[in-house]
Length: 541
Image: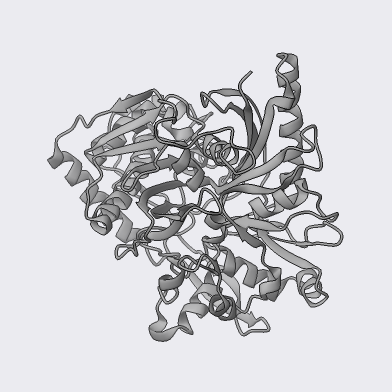
């Protein structure tokens, strides 16, 4: 039988383990477990690290059981890759293996006033003060400010740091450390793609940066060792797969870029999940955005390979708006219903929905924004609102694509798409109409996990998966072409941009005392606007 490669896909709302054929890229089997989220305060989003790693163990064991039931030899699994929700921040005790606090999820907004104070202390109060090294603006989104909050506000973390017991990592680091032995010799590492989302990593030198760590006052001894995206990090010490190497690691959006075979300069993909993430491969040189995009490390597929970079546009709320309509508003009973409801209207009838539940990410980077629905009349009904919600995902993507075209100077003529929301055919057609370009959806939807499996299988010492362009499998796909005229598309987009302006400057923050380094603790005052309440951030479409 052909060699197999496993992939751990740990996302915001679920964990999965998937097994692929290394020769054909065919998905053989998988198992999925949902992850709970907690919302201790308005704007706070947390997950239990113990639940995350337990879900990984469960998914591996259940998938192996399914393989055995089909008489597939588990010994054919030659490697395992990891892909993960990025930026989500964990600190744990390396001696006991116990988390010192819940994982602070990437969507979390508790650090807004911390961010404001960091910006205030920068020359010219410039949120892009660190962009020349990190490719990122100073934002609640990234790991450094979440780690700074933990160091300022959680006594157990402070004590563990003082006694040299604390270590930091993103979700990939936690999973690899646990699977390779945990407190008994577990490997504390991360890959370049996840490191590049912390604001502590220099994307030019490809290592942790002393000046950045000093800026955030982060002790460098807390940080994991940075590795490439494709090499053997260690071997599984637990589960049925004991002895199998873990040899691939990519943040979820980088993994999707690889899984979509966007390995050449200029190729672009968009993933529709909880949020929406567009990445364009820019080759071996980082392109610094002048239009609100992020510059990030796309992948480094081997220790002796050069890094590849990407321009990225991040949208906080995409699929999560569907969950909000279901759980908070009761407009639909299941996420799948939104397509039929929106299609029954066929238009938003002038209604525009800006789902800025967690502020606005690219290209605005405006944390004070909150969600609004405008253009309502007595004629507006729930089907119009459903249509407006789908349009909102497409309009946000249009803003990202426009920024990307301006930064790269080469217009995107075809957008490759993946993620749970791509099952919505109405959404995909709306996206083609609003962008005015072809939208191409692969028939194999598990591109994120596939990317992690490709990186793991191609690693030195494993070499069961070839990344040579001539060896990459042909993926069948479905294409959506624009069906409306440009004037109509531009009119609707202009109205959307007007609505976005209305959503800004809703939230205020006030200092309520300072931590040891003078950064204020947060008090959020949100008198108006739409904001999610538990469990609306969870989405698994």
